[in-house]
Image (cartoon, helix red, strand yellow):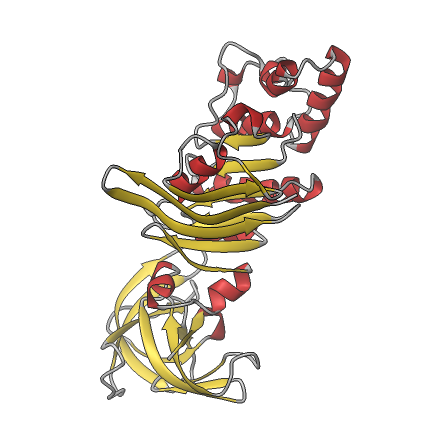
Length: 345
C-alpha cells in the first residue's frame, strides 16, 4: 500500500499555496514534510486527507485516485497540534471512538484500547478524564485514538509543537518507537529539524509551496540541495572549497567530508557548530560575544588572519561550558565535520 502525489497544487483564489508537488510514501514508511511556517506543508497534508480540494494533480492510494473519496472513507488517521480530544469522554472513550463508529464489539474495543494505552505509556488511564491530563498525556491519547482503527495512513500535523522543548524531545523519541513498533505508514508535518530527523525514514524539505529536496535524514542534513535548503537547515554561511580524496580544503582549513563526495569544487555550509576551539587550530580570532547553551557555549569570533572575500569577518564557534573564553580573549579554531554541510559549487 502506498500514497502517491502527482503534480498536486492547491490555490486560494489567486494565491498558490502548494505548487505541483510530487511525493510518495511507501508501506510502513514515515515521511516528514519539513519547512518553515507558511510554506504550504499543512495545506498539502489537508489535501491528502481530503480536507482541501487540489486545484491540479492527483492524490492516489495504491494507484486509485482519491478525488471523489470523502474524508471519512479514505481510511486515514489524523492527529493535529492540539489533539482535539472529546472533553466529555474519558480516555478509553476517546481512544475507542473510531472503533465505535465501525461498530466493533465491546470486548474487541476494550482489548484494542488496552493495547494502545500500553503502547503509548498510559496503561491504566482508561477512566481518567482527558481534562485531567497534561499536554503530553493528551497528545498520547490523541495518537492512540488515531491508531485504534488501524488506519492505512497516519497524518500528523505539528503533533508536538504545542509542548515545551524537553517534553517535545521525549515524545518525539516515543512517537518514533511507536510508529515503528506498529509498522505505521505516516506523513508528518513539522517545522522542527530535530523532530523530523528523529521520526522520519525520509525527509521532504518544503519551501514556498514546493518540495525542494527529498531523501534520508542524514543525506538531507549533510548534502543540502541548494543554498535555500542549506539556510533553512542552519547553514549561516557558505564557503568555497575544493574536495580531494574525501577532504575539503578551504580558507578556514581542511575538513573531512567523506568518500561519497566527488573531487572538485564545492561549497561548505557552515552551521553554528562548524568551528570549535582547538589549541593548534589554523584559524585565529578574538571572542566578541559569549552565550551559554544547555551543553555548550556559543561564541561569536572576529577573525584576524583570514584574508579572503568569501569568508565573513565574524563567525560562530562552540566551546565547552567549562573554562569557555570570555569576550576579548584570543582563540584558535578548527573546522568540525559534524557542523559542515556540502553543497554543489
